[in-house]
Amino acid sequence: MSSIYSFFAGSHSAATALIVDGKIHTIIEEERLTRLKSGEITRTYPDLSSQKIQELSGIGIKESDYRLVVAPSVDAYFRKLINTNYEKISHHDSHNYGCYFTSGFQEKTISISYDGGGELCVIKVFLCEQGKMTEVLRGELNDYASLAHLWGFSVAYMMKNERGENMWKLCKDEGKIVGMAPNGKYDEEIYRILESIISYENLRFKGGVNSWKTRYVINRMWELGYFSDQEKREIFSYNLQLFTETLFIKFLQDLHKLYPEYRKLALSGGLFANVKLNQKINELDWVDEIFVHPAMGDEGVPLGAAIKKAYSLGEIEVPFRLDNVYFGIQYSNDEIFQISLSYEVEREPYSVENISNKLNEGQIIGWFNGRFEYGPRALGNRSILVRATEYETHSELNKRLGRNEIMPFAPSVLKEYFKEVFYPEKSLYSAEFMTLCYSTKNEWVDKIPSVLQKTDKTARPHVVTRESNKKYYDLIESYYKISGIPLILNTSFNKHNEPIIDNPKQAFDCLQNGIIDELVIEDYVYRIKK
Image (tube, rainbow, N blue to C red; front, side, top):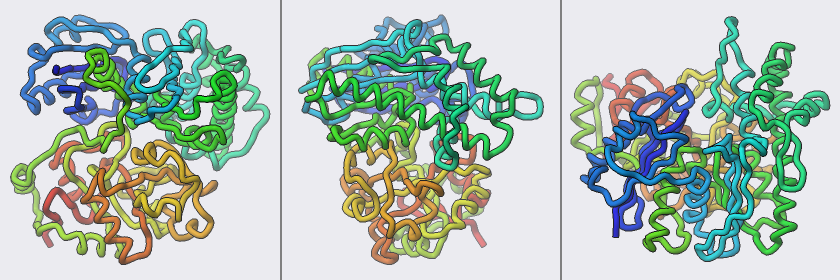
């Protein structure tokens, strides 16, 4: 058996993963430690994450059996960080191996990766069954247009300040467009402009191969006032979302005609951060189930590369299901208490009944438990929690978090009650990682307004099982017994424009600054002394 380190570096999303004896040991995204969101900087290396994993595991990089690199290039700085020999792994192979082998799909599966371009490729498609993967399509960057480029440059050029500087960042703020798209309406002129950038035919996305064309058109739209107010931005967002869904569904339908017996989909790459697109895919009648990789962006490729290596060594043979994605850093009660001494706080032992009652009363609770999550979603280990029953909660949370956005918050829902609230009851394993939207049943719309998109009433639920996170499950179950509501609002534990928190100090800062009312952190509840 072996130890495998895997690293990703590039223009964003640097991360380090470690697999030991075919099992995932630790994965840390660099932004959690630098405290700079990956879209805010232009070149990232897995410096701090690789150091921290060596410290936690006791396995040095140089002493490990294998070292893998997924990166456009390995410069002198990166080589110095690794400090020994390494093997390069394909970017899109890493996406696909990571997604397919964590899907649990033994049946015939189509695995698709699609992003803005990794090592001169924007898309790869594999036919998979019983752990065997066969590549059937590869889209080269110089011959294949990228919908992800269109999204990246749309978000980058849509919002500018008075000096003409971009206020939103690609690889960071695309979700804002997804969130406001349902508020817009169809506009034939805008749709035709998008069609002039990218078209689709016979498994090929054509047109905007050179990203400069995409940049030029979107920037020109900004100059002509297409984004000059919120209503116009919403109209553009609606059409960009519709255009993306229309083209990609055509692509999937063509794949289905070629391979009709393949009825499960494993999806990875930045395009599938789009939870509304994932909803449309999930609702196709011929699709039995989809799985979107929990770390669908480039932060996911270190794990995929390590899985590919473990597969080649015979240490992983067939797809498996993840119990959870809590692969980050954990802190002891003693460490937490020592940090708390720097703050004017008091504590008491955690009681699930006490905190569920406070949620029912409307308090905003910081929730810090165990190892932090891998990927972009807060999944009940670094979360801010509040009841979902009040319309005013959205504006109150925005105020406390320093946000001024219309993006909806998400619910954590007990799996046993999912079908009472949302539909269709399909792809719930993927929904354990909050990767796609669902429609809400009419009788629940007015009961849980703060976790629904205000126009189309969809939600991006986090399905919670007792097996994946018992402490979190027990809290929601206790709240359900009091309120009759089998879900709570769950948003990421961080201030606006910061990564999800890593350590207790960041949690205590949020308590001290009034972002949360009380802090549940491991076995204790902390509050500001009165």
